[in-house]
Image (spheres, rainbow, N blue to C red):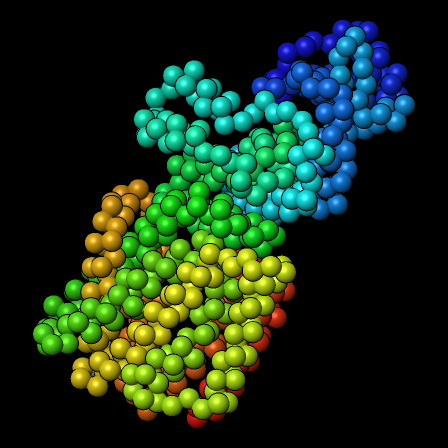
Length: 525
């Protein structure tokens, strides 16, 4: 929105005549880089005047303004005002001119959870609405694309961390054919300075759609992740949380397709791994101190393979899969998937402990499977969210962990089992991602406190009580049945703490899954 063209008195007179306004004050808007923009004030109203500097046709420029009218019902935008001839664009001395509503507020400067969630929702609504619009119907050139940013950074000759790695990655990206990815109309310039906030710091409007064009949705998504989050130098804990929140809220309105996830998975896996490793790194320190202080004897050599597997299925492998899943799906959906653990545990117990499952039991599991189908087929096609797949594998691992606890508590106390399983799992996590331990020096004190809290309560203490329950219970299902409470608690807490309203598919599919698992548990008694 930089100024390239100054206004003459004749042009000001033309604007007043064509829009039936009397201009009292007019100021240049110096921010931005693509068009000439001005703040206009009349006696009672305020406007933004745009003089187009691109070489697009008037029809191409009008496509943006017509599109804004279409999306105004579900995305807050600044609309163009028609002139006396009911046209969006006026022509004077070969200059294309538009007048826009003025949105009072300030541009986004501080990134927080609220802004991340709202932009995730709005951006997904934009993409979902435009996915059925063809490139032919929205045929306009954009001056902002991958080459634009790549060349601008190179020309600037600015030195920054990982510069060589970024340019190397950019060279690889430039060879990729993005035309095969899900596409539609993207904003194309969805940077924080194009977000207007109200007095309560909520998003009031998304402005400057002038670079909107038909392209792969992944470009808008990448701008949010890189230029809203990663560039801000948040500590790794907050950065991962912001990325997770953005993708969770985006996915509620539009599922990220498998092809797109190929470009996001690596970053998400690194972030998720870092959080899990740090959590259990601190848990391992506490556990080692307890083992030494209490002089807990090590497991017998013949039982080490089972302890190793329990550490992997309950901690090392499970935590990595779970954290990746939380980057790709909402907490309420994941908790519903996790509710399958009692039935999966019963199936494993059938083969390990020869515990039989009658016909009614299989029917109950079939009911829960229908709930899974509702979650994955809600949009009419088989579009399984990758987060659900990760969570399903994690649920299978946790179920096998339950079996291992039943086995180990017959030989060792629940306390000893918990300490050594957790320690082994933590060592596995550190071996898996040793660089994550270095993130301790990159996170804030408040983030460190949260991670230590996670190490103590959701890790050591909760797992101890869980293992103690297996030691005291007569049947495995007596313990695992309490996992039915998890989806309810996760959904309720998600609503009140995170504002995470579950989708209708989660409510219906989740209710069916829980119903099947509840009936299954009843017939097991």
